[in-house]
Image (cartoon, rainbow, N blue to C red):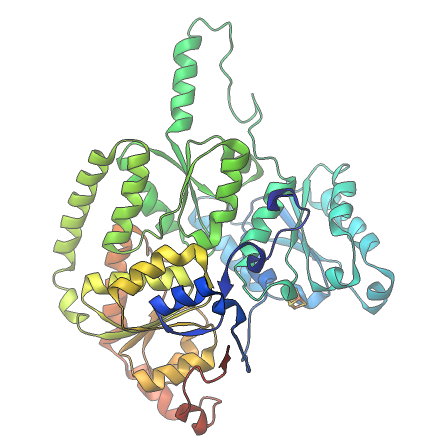
Length: 505
Ligand code: SF4
């Protein structure tokens, strides 16, 4: 049985070669993964790790007209208080109603752990359907129901037959995977399993009638429009400005663009199969759904890295254009965009060139930004990727060629990053949201690896990136003063050790 037919999604560890603990060079990581040693690695000490359920929630909370039911103790939902603010802002920035999230919890107690929580779940689904009339209900299956053996899938199927909403389950218990990126597969598996993904005639589109005297012309136009429609796939770290910039570039070469799956409604999801091509913006987020759409609807897909930096954007656009045999059109667009951008960057580049930066965050984005640093004349002195999987080999290989001697680690551990910062003394750290307070206390300026309020993709993204670097480097008095008056929680002995002292083989 393939992954898509299974009731629950595979963890990343089951379908890919993955790793979360490695230190060396980029090419060593590739060798280590191929020889199997990546799988054996771990740590004797972990400061903290994330739960895949949180990332699944980040995606689900953006889906329009949906209700989320957390089948869990109440605490699992704590993050939704902040997520719903971000989701409302994201909706509004995409021209949609800035509605807050509706979420319920089955609030599992000790007695439910003994007696089972299926009845509570059934009642909660029926209540949500009756009270809020959503189009989609996401049941989030967390650690507790998976430990006690609640058959969440069975409940979803049984109750879903009688509800007006489509009911599906996101199977994402935190303990199931050490790689939080499993969350993306869990979310997409829920979409694949119980959400309609083909359009309804007369509701979602006007079919061409056989008796229409212009049938031939109209059907050709209908099919051409479908073929020239490209679906691009977003994620929580990809902002509306990124989507708009890529849509601008694709429109300029004559393509229609739809963006999935965050911020989609049930109707928009039905149109996902009405397209000529699916394009990844980051394979860590979307390869699972892209492969499914090819298998189920025969829609080809392109995975070719992130459209970040001159070479990244060029490759991304050309791959799409070559699929449509319009590469000449794309080349002239790229040449014209690059020329304008290089002109605009002239006064800014001297302020960042020669600076030494460390990069810390999601694997594809960190490596893509390291490659862009070379194009901008900035020195990369270390890259920490939050995980490794073999889908990222192409970008890791390119990084290894561009920065063959630069330390590369697979690490999401802040104590390792702080130790590195103390040793490498970078001018700037480009890092994931959530780490900036730590870095500021360590006395080093930092900027976001991504920021959904600003573009990072396409040519607008390169320009904005340089401006952000220039701003971060201009005045460092905040971090200088903060470091003087605050203390990190580590003992001085820790800084005498190798940053990756706790990694085991
Ligand atoms: S690890 Fe399990 S119990 Fe903890 S937040 Fe995640 S799903 Fe809930």
